[in-house]
Image (cartoon, rainbow over all chains, first blue to last red):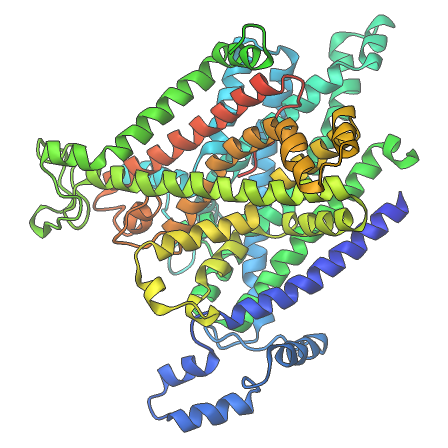
Length: 317
Length: 304
């Protein structure tokens, strides 16, 4: 099993290297290049100056050579400057990383707190009215356009009721802890609502599957109470696939918050990726995208590892 | 159709799923309304592109059943036109992605060995990518740098074609995996071996003998993917990277909604509600098809 995980790790490294080249290449296909951007902001530059600048920064070299130069610089710890913020890329990403981590963990906790009990309870009585309601809710969750849900929440709670702020992290001029919490309510609600449907479905399916097993019947036959069988025997096994999905989601959530963060003007990594691509901030976009790719790959690896770790049966195979 | 045939049994199972049947009807109504957009506009006497700056954000009236938008255009007409685009993009992309996935899955499953390993590592790689940021990068690529002729790019449909291509490029993986698994299961069956024995070539075996036997998972996965694709298209269009105005899509009708949310919140309701209903219907339909065509299969996995 260790070998399996190692080969997955090797694969992830290969995908990462390939993707770094692909994303680097795609950056070159963005509208304009860094010199165009310079010219646009400085009317004194002539076409001849532009050519000289291109040569100076190595932009006239072939793609592979430029990629190699960039990779060497990254290996030396130099990720370049962000054009939009005028600061080193790593410095620019620090605060958004923290903001996204906070938003993500709160949303995940919220989603799991709602979805796992609902899914498990629905599985205990398949096809009951309760089960059908939960199923309907799950379908609604996976079919909801996230940006529209965000807009509707803003309309109801900010525009009509006026009880919550429509965006940002705090009131202009700084705010206390309560103020910051109030700014988190709608983004967290949006993100968790978007993932509840998925988790309900997985939890319900896993639970139904588990309850069919012989060891459940055995435990009942040996006189274990229904509550004990469900909580001690079934629930723990049913959580295995759910944890796998959870690990898969960590990477996705990191960039998947892009739409929610953009709508709520929440300064996290998703909004940073979007703004840097839109603002031709090549260094920042490149680094942020590679980080997103790396985290998604890491999430996939974690999912694999979690599966082996939680389910001893797979280790022996 | 013969009574008692597998297809008849599938149809019977499908009819029993009330949500799936209702979804099919709802989708037919939405599609018919979108297709009949010119007719409905003529009946109501409205021009979908007419800008009326004196009647901006007007509430519903006899002339404009759902009111007007920030430029005074009729909301109902734009919803219908947007529906044409959103549905066409969803269906076209789903079919293209299914074709790519089917080809890759058939090749991997039939030939096995190094080709299978290569194609499946490629599939794993694509699945492991951060979907949304990658789509945004692809949507922001300047097509003239790819050497496409400017006159092609000028046409209003170029933006629609681009969105179809980039989503299809990333969306084929589910079908590829399902088709590969199904092909592996069918490959060693007697009728395939018989076809080999009578001298049928690989292409003929894959298309005539294997493909019909792996059709059910392809149909189910493709139906389920339409909903996801409509969600992706609308999100990209909402961000200003998908279907480009003046061509309306349900997503780009919401692009300005955030700025207008204090002055005209009602504008944000309809396009999103239609996206939601359509995606919901495709998901119910796919679920119903799955139960009908493949009653033994596990519950589906939809990932938005």
